[in-house]
Image (cartoon, rainbow, N blue to C red; front, top):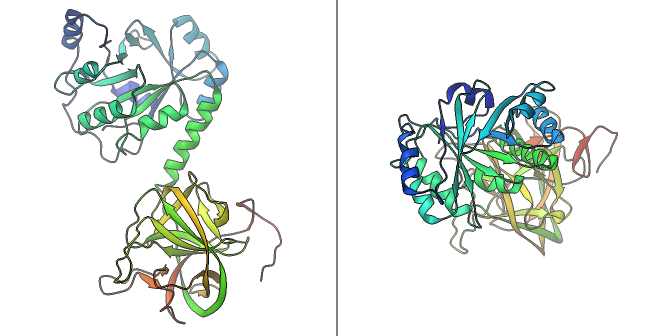
Length: 401
């Protein structure tokens, strides 16, 4: 679906946002509204689908201020007087609602609202039936997820944008993630600035996942069986691929995070579990969104962690459950190839537990089981800076052994 991150670019490029109240309109009025629209599927959508549009519909100045501070400056108003008054205090793009239509300052129709409260109404919003360039949808009733998914599926590859009216940040996230790709954006209709803050935090986490972490090669200098300990298996709500895992280390300094492979590889003795990482003992750190770390023992269902591949590409994933059991442990130490750092990690001593090494091509090993790990093997680590306090990096003097 076509997307945009800039409200001003939307106003500049969108010729019309068609609007029609489906569920309660007479057939004659529905037909007339269709004739007033223009064709939606006239051009392919922009690839990627990573950027989303946010418009704000509010009567609260604090909400307006919070939105403008976060880069959202398109607002919907029921009165031109209010819109002009707010425009005098902040640089915003006001839009004005008049019945089922939305106009800009020049009285040009740029948006409109379609309300859906029944399956029949949803059926009418299809590329072949709706001749609109862009569409704003207001879901009425208890059903939102499945209707939003149906719309995403129907309009994929079409030009224009499809926005959904959301009454809180949680609802907005549902629309933005429908069928993974999500709708093109939301109209956030709220009176509480916390919803603005929460939605911006959500977008920040999404944008972080587009970046790439720098991983460093390190050479194993020590492998030692150390005895029993309580280790943590992290089961995620998503599937990991070969070469993906979690960044884990020991110690609150967290200066070197090892990339621990998932249990996605097939073996002769046990079925693969591509959702699981046998991550290490309870005191170890794991990387979580926001450039933070968490103790493995602190993870629980619903928390987010970062899944990283051997090229440094990463994404967030939700923890489904955490399993802590007493198991034999092995200590691994490694020295970075391009510096003087030495890093260590404890892992369960088992064939299914592996560290990720540099990409060796089709003939090389990506995941090296700890049971076959030896001095001289290369593994990947993530170098980090200062000490940690409650998972946040700080600058202080600290010695760990």
